Image (cartoon, rainbow, N blue to C red; front, top):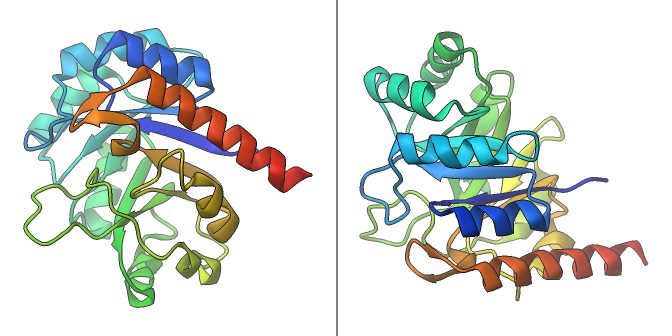
Length: 219
């Protein structure tokens, strides 16, 4: 079964190229001002153009208003919107209708009860994303480099099409794939040498680790 791989928080041509060359199915651009991975929509638009035909571009927002979304969609021209805040099911419907784009809804997970929150979104969001709950005091809803118990996803509603995120890196991706068997994965801080600074070598190492893990599973 194919595995979708999203490299998120890209800001530079060299790291975008590494993600594309590695086989990323999705590339993510962060539009949340408090994040060290924030990128201006105009710059993201140029990067998005370089990914055309090779990977889907995902615009990641956190409780963004229509004015900011208008600018993002106009200047970046993403293939998908990722709603990583407290967006209600009604808001997801509004956003999809306004921009005629698929939407992925993110959820923070630390225990089984957190997965119950997906029910109202299952027939609304085009995809889900499961990230670890932020550490206490963090202003970032994602990209914190922490993970959750991946075994929780073994009991997930089979209708849920999702990406697994949160604390993934080249060292633990084997275990994550084995325990959760997700249809897709999302990585950001795990391929950075400093917050918001992607590293080409780490991106390449991550793809090698994914390949090796999948080879082991297929054997």
